Image 1 (tube, rainbow, N blue to C red):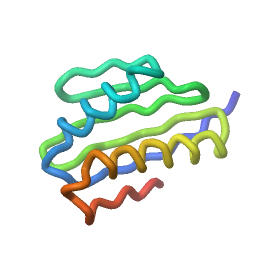
Image 2: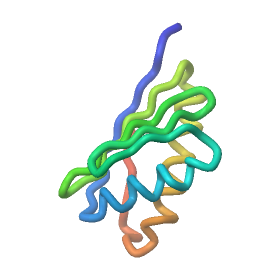
Image 3: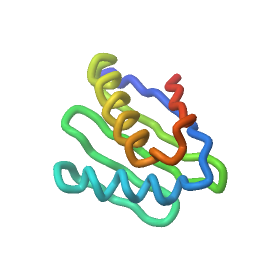
Image 4: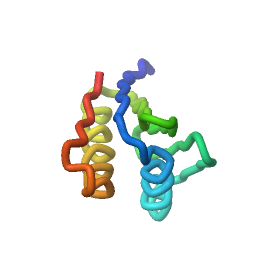
Length: 95
């Protein structure tokens, strides 16, 4: 099984808060693990790994297909933007 991976580094001073919020939110539906600096959300079809730094939230999505990866990117992106409503300029650029 070939895996497809994408990354995004989202500039924010609140990376830790958003990482924990994402993990807790998805923890109702998916397996999650997190500490003060890293997190992981295991979705059906893929994994999102998160890293909270002082100036950015780093995201990595890994999946078996590009289609599923793109869907997971969209899910993470939309939830992050909802949680970061006080930062309307926030952009998530996946590569």
